[in-house]
Image 1: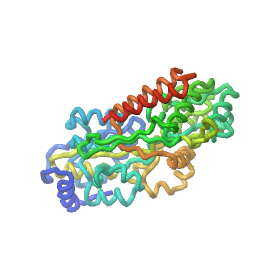
Image 2: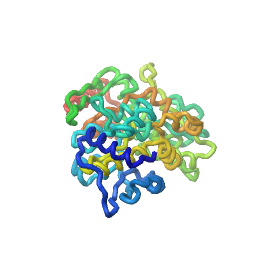
Image 3: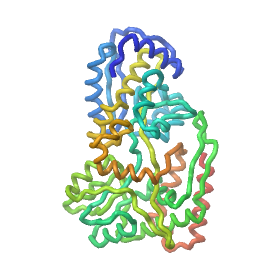
Image 4: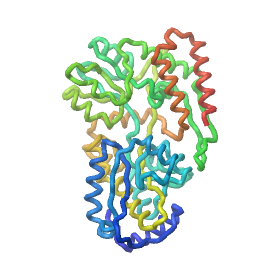
Length: 414
């Protein structure tokens, strides 16, 4: 998108009014550096595409330069919570951190044509993920913040059931890799049996309410399934980024639960045996459940500025980064799944095995809301205990006691 000078002045007023930023556009003798943070896998393509884009912006290319650096999404939020001023001008983050960033005034909300583009060009879930209390605070970047299963079709011919996958991997001398020590993945069993855990977050970023039903018959069923999987000889603990274990030269993986960004590695390792599928079902005490999980999004934020022209320019950068051209570039560079409606309907995206599997899996998933950091710590500890074998052979009563303790801690985690 190329914004002409007259439009830039008008948009400066819109952005200032919406975001609470003062100041007016003004000329500057030296170019001002605008810092952008993105993930390491998309750093180079982001820098190159922004350089090309800035070269077409006659009203801004003599006033600004753009420097792109790699920064993990978790580190982004930590930096802004520690010192907003030192944060990048434009940055990407996971949608469950929106409330925290709003609370510390780290987000300049888009207005005018920028807001119109967000609503018109992205799927509803991603727009809602960028919204708090009815106000859009960020730009959708992906609709892919979730996980599914990659598998070797020469090892796993039927990826539909967890029990079957484990048996097929064992028969072939391979492993089923699952990130049990990561709370983001542990909930797939718990949500799969119908339990819930959610938090209500106020506009100031504080958590005001919590709901959790892990201490239940449904929670017990999930607990039993997790324990059974981790005690199976074909199970292996992973980090969620283990597609390299498909290596044809002595690789140990038959199937790996992971994220879309691992697709390129999985395709390279597996070749003609590359497969992707939604998470499987599992059966406990004669009842079959579908594994669930979180459905989430990545967003792009703009840090508030007092100078109106800089504010508009940063929003123009974010608008470009969230647009069709850049979403396609990130997909091609690192497999990111687009939130852009037009791209989602292209043959390229529709034929992508990984994104197709994720799309099906999202139908079984819970929208990822706002969670306190201690939630992830507690779930990690719970998964680590299961992975270590702590509950192997535990009675139903012992498992229910553990679930009651976990639920109590989660309800207090505000």
